[in-house]
Length: 248
Image 1 (cartoon, rainbow, N blue to C red):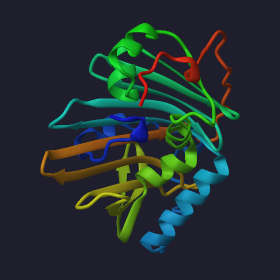
Image 2: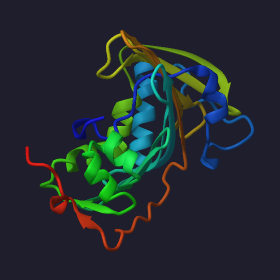
Image 3: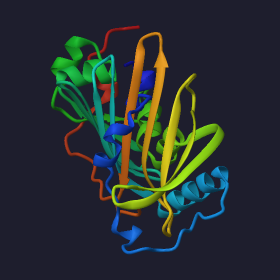
Image 4: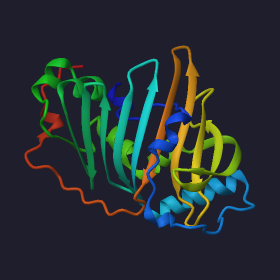
């Protein structure tokens, strides 16, 4: 994965992992609450879910991708303008933080090379060290777009012609599924699961896409809506601009 696509979620997903992976916040309540989405069109359900998510302003998430290529797990906490994310692809691992106008990343040699796109020698040299990335650095926009809540919602929400089904039960909660296309993908489909009980938050997503390289599938779970993010800049970070990078 190159720096231009740093930490972007891979497309696709299988429903089979969905129920086991869903993590739900206590805000969804217990018992048999009223159906806040009754009578709404698929577009209205999606609009309510996105508006609710934006109102809460932050979320914890887990995304798991599988397919013909190596599996990937992404765990993170996303806020409106800040976030933290850990990406694991086999033995490769990378952590990133966005705090204010500063971004930070740390990974093992494989993660810095295969996920971030650093040259092998540079990745080995800076493995395990925090690297600070400024807005003027080439990696910054990729990190900023990858770890914030608006971008997370844009990545996983369905697009195009929408359909809905349910209510049904997922993770012990009544949900409505809104199905549509994958944003930016051709031939992909995604289902956005929204709790019918107020405040009607998204609790999961599953998607699938097929290309010449095979079929990829992804399942995602959302929890802790409205959590307070406590992110601290790591001490002793190395500026990205000072890394030993080969001349272009």
